[in-house]
Image: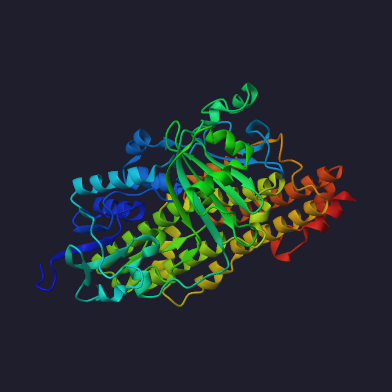
Length: 553
């Protein structure tokens, strides 16, 4: 040890939660000679904002972390995402609600993770592998109104110093995985206010609930014959907000509401208020049962967060919620920290191998990646309005899902090969920033949001917003197991195939919206007229009403 520190290590990770714990295990398995210390201020991990894992995390957990058997034994294997839609009066029983979900499990499994349990188990797995995990250990001067600058000294050449309740720790690489309390982000003022995504949430763990498979009639239960619905990541969709339902045991759920404050702001500031709000919805009232017991409660007034720098040539990094927080739907948290963790590992590996010439370009391109994914996932003004309509959400969800399996999943499964190739060959003066931030994919997603908002305006004008919210079932296999996209998921990424696949997805999306409008108006569909009027170039900003009127004749 150095005489000015009590402990020294190669890598110091602040935060032993899911992001920090998985990074410690990843580094230990990939670079076993690294000396790793993990700090965690908690002794027992409290429940937080729960969500399912995505395919990116599943692959990361199975292949890189080698914890697939642990997850299958200790956590639910998800039977997929499931969306339910209600009447304007919120009075439909669940068997009458329109539903989007699979009849059979998806070929790429995902998990419903009991987060505190997994975080505790990761501590033991890491300790057993030689990682020093210090629970109940805080970085000093990190309370409200205090300055982390008094506790952290960044020094690329001689090693960073972190003053903690366990003494002063010196490290070569410093990772902040401490969530929104991130001492590094606070010290360096990395998280500016961003009012573009005013999403808030309240959540609870509730005992005494009824299983989804105990509800409904026989015909409804047999509509999903393989696994049933009890192990689904379930969403109840409303105008301006949505409610999640994540099973933790046979009778305990994590239940929460996420809302856009531009459209609604329910009174859910306490556990009792949250339960009262949930009971305003017939289906949720049935699920809660006659005597639910509140086990924990949490709330967050502002979810969206983007640290403007997450990787540094000075050998510090952010991951998990310290780095980026977005709308929790679609398991975004597990995707984002999985990606950051892999990139941090690549940076440390190159640094150790003295390939320091690569590091500036790594920081440049990794920064482009984190900003790009944040911008693509931001909610537009009208996005939460569309969530409560089966017709609007079904089309948007199918498009986003096809893009996901066309680009994001293959990229994750090959550990970001193309990003790393560009980082190693382009330098820092390449046009990647402009190409990615304003590229064709970004413009496609922007066009899809615009057309969805136009669609909602049209169906609200004709009082058709809730028309198909009852009695419709859409098997998600029609888009999340797309016959064109699924075969290429496991193959090396080929950019020559991704463009045409996006063009096909965009055409399907526009056709779906127009078909719905024709159906709602009582008209007749003409594929020939659609082909005549439809402009496949989304950069042309073709209005939805123009396509609709052209098909309607």
